[in-house]
Image (cartoon, rainbow, N blue to C red; front, side, top):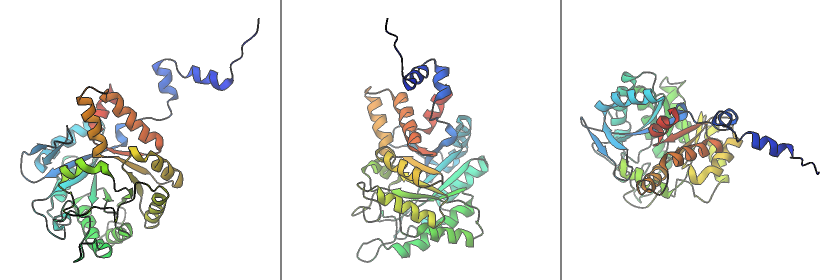
Length: 330
């Protein structure tokens, strides 16, 4: 009788397919709610919880409801939020973005009062606050004026830091903004406050639901002049290197799912923490398909988040954070 031998690598593979305990023991990539950042849309008023039609389960909420939100997040093991504001009024220079009593500044103070240990991430951009919907100031010809925008972005960063933000996240994609913000924070005495740069932010079609949620659709044109071409990956590494040179502490890739290769490339290029933003369009697609019964929402969400972590992200910004945290605890 012929003796059959099994190559060692195959035997090892078979042994790791056993019980759930065995699979957990040898799992290479793990999810933990402490790795999630949960985005919140905050608005003026009291008792406001306005559902966002294109993002089922998400809502614009008023500042007075944030304490309850903080308690729920703590109970789920989620320790960080990313704030986006809906202003009372918009103008050409996005003044509520850097106002002392701006909506995100109010929300930051409320959250830190409710839970001082909750990490509050302040998004720095002007698109939510400008009447034209672009991320910086405009020239008379309607073009984004990069250098003139840096001063206002730096003012917004310092205003959020003064309100108590734990992490500043510039998402505007203006050239030189990380350096300008770092200098402004240092000059204002916030020397230890870290910056999470949206380093590789693509001009993506996946942002549609967010623009409804934040009322930030450009009044004309698009953002391809200052956000990245989806066809480019090497450019992402140049953008990341530039932000690191300007003293970014965390670098981000946005979106996540269509850019897993970019996340991997960035992970291999730096030892800094890497964040990935599982954006609104990615969230909305899952919600829409699950509502039709076309897929298992729980399985898809956990597989999706695992893929982002497996690609190399240390931090995942995701609207699925609450649901994923509940599923992971079961």
